[in-house]
Structures are given as structure tokens and as C-alpha cells.
Length: 228
Image 1 (cartoon, rainbow, N blue to C red):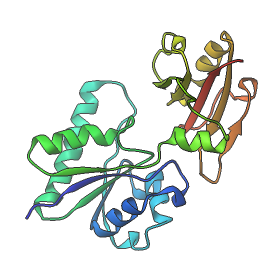
Image 2 (image 1 turned 90 degrees about the horizontal axis):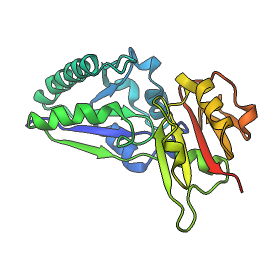
Image 3 (image 1 turned 120 degrees about the vertical axis):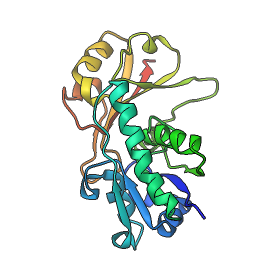
């Protein structure tokens, strides 16, 4: 019998925010896949290790993804990762691919799952708490009230048009262009808050746009609302 692939969302950073289902799935899978060169460099592994006792007994696949927007390079990498996973599935081993937040939101995992499923293997998604939900709770803020709209925007791309949308805007993947993003936001009549490394030991909260630094870690997220 062939193994099965699970895309497991481990949540935003705090191990206690992992779901029971995520923990049970990781416990029963003999092979863990992490999107990094070595599990010690995978934030998702460190989160899961805070809740799963038998992590050291697992086999590991280091599936590092290059930081590039070149689709040809990325597609080659996804194919390579899928091939390594399939090798384990053919041995009858279940594989848990660990991803931050939720696998359905801007996750490398989804590209790999599509390849795996196209080749006839079973794959399932185990949802995790999205980073922007955890960030809103840290700020004691609502993301959407009544008829408010909520827009999740990848701010590593151009965000000017997206900022015209009504309602709350969540800006993800901001770190690489943070100075530019901040400059754009300064032109708007908006309230902005940012959380860096939400739920992690080095978490930082910025309550005002003017407090946000020009440089921050990869795991930085902004919540933008119209000023009242």
C-alpha cells in the first residue's frame, strides 16, 4: 500500500496554537518534510517540536525552496520536492509536510500537493491557524465587522491598487519591501499595525505606522484599516 501525503499547518508560531489534528497527524507520520535546508533551520519544525514528543525519531526530507519569483526555477524545485516525497510514498510511508500558518494561504506546499495528486497519490490538508488571525488576536482587534470586507494581499508585489479596496487589508510577505510599503501607506489616511514573528519568542508589536522599522524579519504582517 502506498503512503499518503499530509500538508500540516502548524499555526503562526506558538506551539500551543497547533490543532489536535495537526499534532496527531505528525505523530503518526514516520516521515517529516520541511521547507528548509535542515530541520534546525525550519521554523515549522521548531513549532511542531514544541508539541510533538517523538520528533527526533522521524525521518526527514529537507525540501528547501529558493527565494525567487522565477516560475521556471520554482516549478523545477516543486517537481524535485514532489519526486523525493513520492519515493517515500512508494515505500508505504506517510509524509507530513510542515508549513507555517495554514497550508491553503500562500504556501509552497500547495504547488507540491498538486503534482503529487496529478501523479495518482493521495494527499490531504490539515488546517492551521492563519498568521493574520493570530495577529488580530494579539492586537485585540477585529478583522471584519458586520459588512466589512477583508482583503489578504501579498505585499511582495505591487499593492497600490489593492489598497483602494474597502475594508481591512492584511499585508503579508512585507519584509522584502517594507520601506517601500511603509512609504506607500504614509500617503494614505489609514491606521496601520504590524506584528513581527507573531507568537514566537522574539515577537515585536508596532501599534503605529511611524513606529514600523524599514527592515524586519520575513515573518512580518501588517493590518491596515481606514482611519475613523
